[in-house]
Amino acid sequence: MPASKEQRFLKSAMDEQGGKISTEEVLKWLAWRNREVVVRVSPTRLSRMTHWALEESSGRIRHSSGKFFSIDGIRVETNWGSKSEWAQPIINQPEIGFLGCITREFNGILHFLVQAKVEPGNVNCVQLSPTLQATKSNYTRVHQGKSPRFLEWFLDRSRSRVLLDQLQSEQGARFLHKRNRNILIEVDAEIPEDPDFVWLTLGQIKRLMAFDNVVNMDLRTVVSGIPFGQAEPVLEPASFAEAMRLSATESRRHFIPLDDIISWFTGQKTKFDLQVTPCDLRTIADWEMSDECLRHKGEQFFRVIWVDVEISNREVTAWQQPLVEPVREGIIAFIVKRIQGVPHFLVQAKLECGNFDILEFAPTVQCITGSYANSLKVLPYLEYVLTARPDQIRYDTRQSEEGGRFYREQNRNLLIEADEDFPVECPENYQWMTLNQLLMFARFNNYLNIQARSMLATLRFV
Image (cartoon, rainbow, N blue to C red):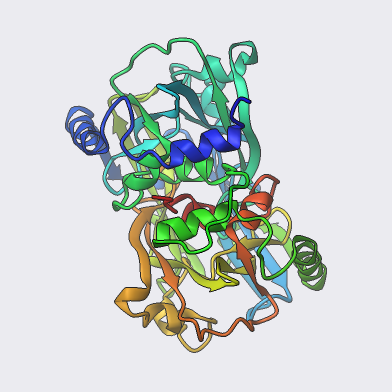
């Protein structure tokens, strides 16, 4: 009997060596691409932006074409959390873009075609990204540049088989109702070689996520939704990686049944309200806009800056745009506890103002918009995460946010294994879930937020 796609995904995730290029060589290749590609990103003034300007009638910052994205003002009202009203800038990008990987088998192992891609906001210029990473404005060539490489393979479905196809959200605190199409296709034909692209197994991609800022957010979200099916239960996992594999493939031993989780989450959504209305950026009391930037008066949250960009290997090699710059580094963490012998993740139902459907599943701790040092006594589990013993920390690295919209934003990502005496009782907006259960929800739209998906993508099985 032929292997199922879930079995093939798991086999690829278990292979960290690869058949086309070693993982060590990937790091050398990325360093080489960094030397070869010319990148210049420099601040400019709003008044010097050729195609971007403040629209007098609406008070938002937009492109002259009306495409790409805009920086809008919004007013928020909610009964979730400690703050019931506020106003802020937000990225409004209503179009749905492509985040996709071409896959192909080599020597019986599924490989993913990934590219060394430069985004203007990347911390370290070149990062691993999906085969195709393009907004609708980009792939319809509003910029009048070249079409993205390999776009035709995603548009002409007669040449491929779809393995995964999902609409997934992006940062709900920074984007208004933003979603992208996350897609994996498989081909049998030869793909033309390109110096910016290499074939990697899923295990190699996961291994590279152990390094700071190597795998970009878009590749992390694409692979985060991959299902691994069910496997024979491992009664006594010999390592933490094996325990993660057990959590991903065990469908019977779970603390809370799936139907009860759906009911809990539905109840959370009906309990909380979220009203978002547009407003003029110039009317937001706590924010001020100048020719240099749009910033919070208390230097909190983030700034919107204007930049000139030159990247030698992009479809358009020079342009201008706004970028969102964080005020400080954030922290994102999952607490994991073995319940009935299976690792469970402590998940919160979190509201963010740009969410498409009020709430999404988020990591145990998610602090990316302000100073978490001042929130130790306010946010559940934050102190536990920050004071975890070294032997409890199973994953600790810095991962970048999306460099096409965020300027040098990286957040500390942590996976903390709780002790046996850690309580299973939790606040009403938290729930324990296995990785297998989380991956079931990842098949559908607007359940797992980008921070949760990004963390789950990093989990290794060997």
